[in-house]
Image (cartoon, rainbow, N blue to C red; front, side, top):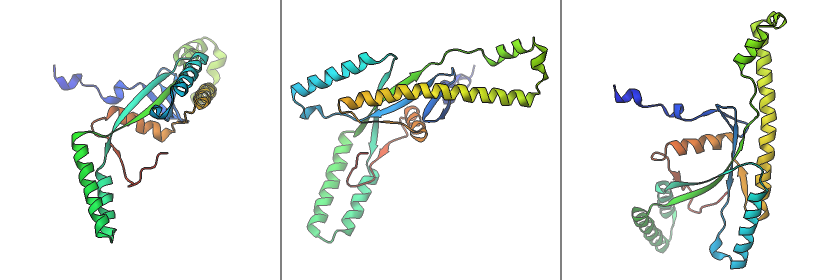
Length: 228
């Protein structure tokens, strides 16, 4: 047997049906929302502050009535464009002294990166929602076939009704997971952690990064980094 026949496409290995409304819809009908959370610089905290944060985090976890998944995602930083921006800055600098300082800084950064890969860590909380299992389309069709009244509808009307039901169920499930996610965001804010629910575009980028770790690197484009 050929080895190529045994290799699966990446899409076949990912159980994602669709990404919409800032949510990931899986093939089994369950939903996921992803919250990106800021970090805390514990090196500047006293022991008492650390104890308070630990206690707050423990109380936060104990207050949840549903499971969550915490992910730490590391991503290699590409500094090539950052170094190019420094070169442009040096060319525009009229002071010879500052030009020399920028050159030394470029050499320092280049040498440091050769010896040590620069990584950026993202802290993510995955919020799940598993809806109550409902009869599948085939089951419903089998039941309605036994009742002549239901067979009076044409196929177009049936498809419209089915689509309307699916949209209604999705909105109900979306409301449920939104409530859970809001609880996560509010709970994390109590002990100083800022968080943000990932949008559709951010979710697509996140999963692309997960499945293409060797080809995707985060770029630093500005001389002065700005966290947002």
